[in-house]
Image (cartoon, rainbow, N blue to C red):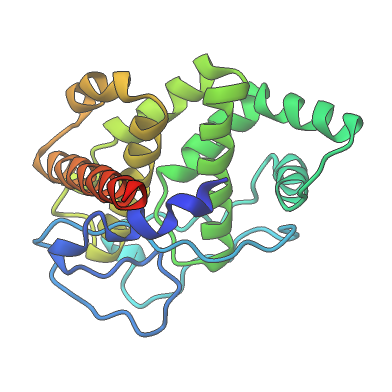
Amino acid sequence: MRRALVIPVALVLAWWGISVTRSLSPSRAPASVDDPPRAPRVAAKPATVTTAPAPLKAAGLAKQGSPTMSRPFEFQKELNSYLDLQAKVFLSAEEEREKQELLHHGGLMRALGRRLREATRSQQAMVEQDAAIDLLVEALKAGDSGVASEVLRDVVQDRQVEDSALDRASREQLAGLKAEVLYQWSAINPQMSSNLQAWLPGPVSQKIWSNVLRMQQSNQAESEARRRSARH
């Protein structure tokens, strides 16, 4: 569902020139955390996630207070089911019912929201976060939109990206997650834009939002140019 937005989201904050811990590219270049972070590039997801994320082992990271996401995910079975269903082009009636149950599973959605507010360097945990955004955005459209909105609002309001005491890698990764949530939520429901702006907790979040809007405007201009060109 989300892959159509991957390229523009990845460019939303590219003007800031900051690498993202969430990106799986080995060639990413480090940059200063004093600048706002950029949005993630989403890696391809495996069909299932079978084990809990491994704890971070980077030197000095624990001393800086960065979360490790080392605890098992309490809804791993449900998450695996969602990833399996997401990988299928056509769903049977039974699979559609299973998916609807997941999109109305308040406990699962709230747990995924907590995952989205935890920084990580584990690729497996990043898969969980990718799936979390997919599921929550899908629930906004075809599931329990009330719970999904509540969970995503917590991500938008999360203040960790504003905390200069938090290590750079964590701020960058969390900022990428926030950028993607802002991009997708405002894309499927433009009427939410004023609320999203009001929920931003500080200048870093406001800069992320500013560049999300800039990218959306650029995309709209390009689409209109293509339509005009096609008419001629």
